[in-house]
Image (cartoon, helix red, strand yellow):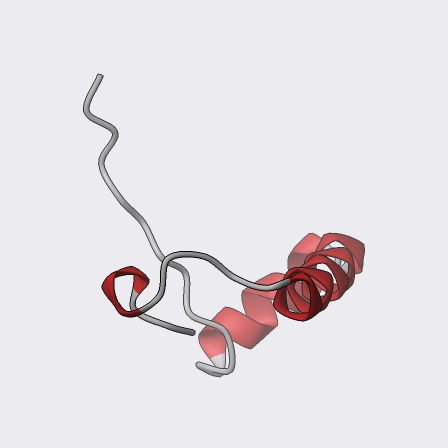
Length: 51
């Protein structure tokens, strides 16, 4: 990951990589995601929405 203030945008290669990663995560089932979070291999990031 990168700090947004360090670069203005991502390049097409990075975008492609993020899209592949998104496909991978989208294919995981709820139980697999829960197991990855439990084992700390995946970290759930929560944030409050300010509307």
